[in-house]
Length: 188
Image (cartoon, rainbow, N blue to C red):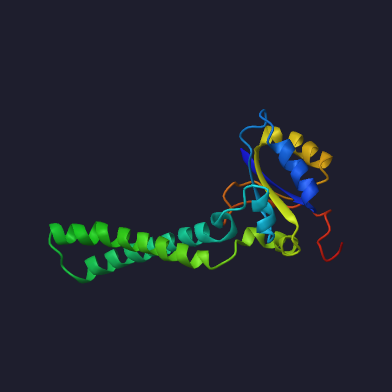
C-alpha cells in the first residue's frame, strides 16, 4: 500500500540536496511533488510542483456532486414512475436510464467546478509553511520504502511533518496521521 509522507525543507540548498538524493536511479516508483508559494524558485530548479488536483478539492467535490446527483436522479425516477402511468417502451427507458445518469454526470461536473474554487482540506495543515516560502515535499512511497525515505530525508535536514495513508486526498474516508512533535511556523 502506498503512503504519502510529508516533509519540510527550509531552504533551497537543502532542497537541491534532497532532489539529488531522490533522482538516484535505484529509487524508482517514488512519486514526489513540492507544495510552496515560491513556485518560481521550484520551476527554476525544474522540479515538479503540486498539481491543481492536489491543491484543490476538485476530486472531493466531484465525488460528492456525483453522489447527490445520482440520488436525486433515482428519486426523480421513482417519483415520476409512481405519479404517471408510463407504458413500456422508449419513454420509460429514457426515464429509467437517462435521467439518473444525466444527473449523476451533471452533479459530478458541477461538484468538480465547485471543488476547484476550494483549497484541498488535506493541505490546510501545511498552508502556513507554504505561506512562509518554505518547501513542503509530498512523497508517495510503498510501505517497505518508508524507512529508507525517512533516513534520506534526515540526512538532507528535512523534517517529517505529516503522513497520509491514502494516495488521493479528495476522499472523505482517508486516514490522516500527523507527527505531533513538529512545531508550527508560528511556534518556531
